[in-house]
Image (cartoon, rainbow, N blue to C red; front, side, top):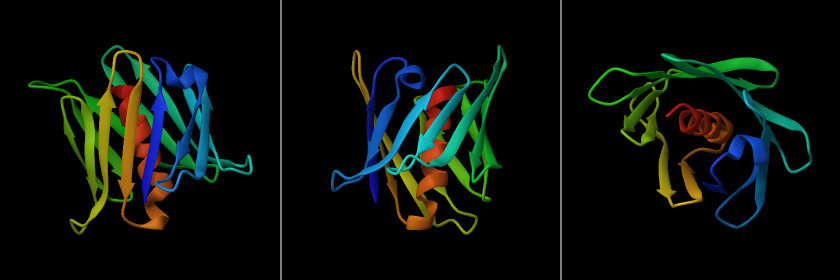
Length: 148
């Protein structure tokens, strides 16, 4: 399943829609300075990303079903920042622009992340290979976008 979202310069304040490859609405997102809440098409809370940022410590907590399910952290060490993923035993692959893929504990590919960055809009595509991983992979990708 491929999830797509397009957002402006400050997406956490304005909100956006997450659609799948058929054009169907999967989630809506709305937030503020420190929190982004995902809702399903019926308006029920699906998940949440909470940002805890300090000058040299950036991380996001990932919540689903009212409980913390993982975290995404950014390490500012050279040659470029790295992203550490603490979620379901998954590992993150990242480059200077952010998260690019997620693999499972056995090395299987969970998701691929692609971003197109324009002057005023960004488009994020998250290709998830299993339906049960859709929400955690989307939360991880959104958190990584926030801390890069």
